[in-house]
Length: 549
Image (tube, rainbow, N blue to C red; front, side, top):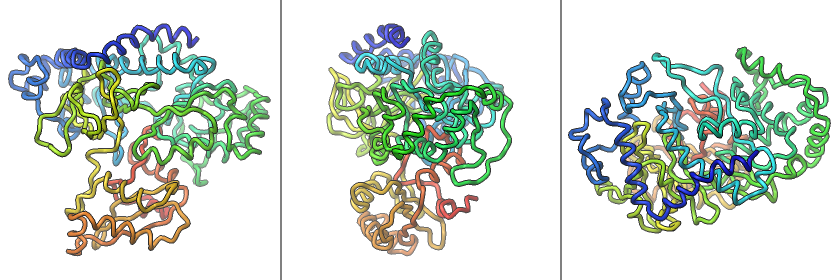
């Protein structure tokens, strides 16, 4: 099955490899496609002389940099049903961005945008299947998180969200990929995270020949395996008896609301009667071993794909301890809005998705300078990404910071180093995520605690709280972090004026799980949630104290 998929992906992969030798020409083609998708729209009508723009320099001179807030009005018009606002093509659906510090934002998806995603995803999957033949020997798991109680539609009737991960791949491949997914996309209809994980595990334990696991945040995988330990005996009984009993409580024992959809109930009912005695036996053996090694359950597992850069790097060791001996491939940088990079096994870092969108790179140290193009970047320098797509985003400030690690042929390899826009500023302290990461790395020890995050809290005066999963004394840790933050002029000045209180440390338990739960409450999907060292949203003290209001 996957051998046929490999053959189908080969033409796209060859075109991508050829484009790596001439990124300037490939990016010029992308810009032409973006301009064509935008001609004759409301957006184009606001830009003087848009119809005469041809080159990258003309594009930069004519089109202002955009942000999610600047686009909000246009997105609302599309949601109400208005056509040709951002693109000539109709909007097929909205996808919700994974926003790292707040509620998700709707991103319009067109057929042209899907084509641009596929110009990156096809070569990426081809690389894995070609270079790691063992992956072709069995099914794969691609992370699925609950979509909510029902698929929503906007006022204008546009769907919000896609039901299947395969929807991002080329249409001819979707039936093939659906058949090799170990867990069907319908699991995403679960109304809550805990039953979603349970049913996911029900499928995975039955899949002894699993060959690939692909998740985003490595802590997603750790939490999934924690659920296996939590529900293992119940799951083994279900496999023995041919039953399926998703839990009715969350991970902390709190009853879940009982309002499930008819489609979810029918899906669960349709799985009743499927007994798996070998799976039950393997699961009990794994439980006796403490689920420290996935080899008992999945002896053919050949590859783990997950984020390994920036804050996600701290969660990688915990995930790998559950899968000893399994190769890990870091993911590229992929946002709901578009693809920035994709991983290649022989590259120093993920390589720019040079055939997908038109990319620009702004120098954070020279914010007023003209952003550079892909062929103009310098090894060792960090840049903020601007994205232009056939989905209607023009010079969109994505907020991601990347560093050039080298080149494949003439195309840059870019490592994600964090968010360029992750700055908190309660009273003028201008505290950046990059600075917080440096401070926490210096004072939390090695390895770092399983969970650590700084977040603001309003009060008299406002202050920052360090939420940390540790048994170490808290006061010395808070004092050390406070001293380090005071090395920054703006933070120190706010403290001297009394506008800002000192850092206090708060001991937490099950930090990653509780963090995920609140991010879901704020509008994110479990599979999209990113770990952060600095969260801009207040209210975490109440949440971790058990009073999330």
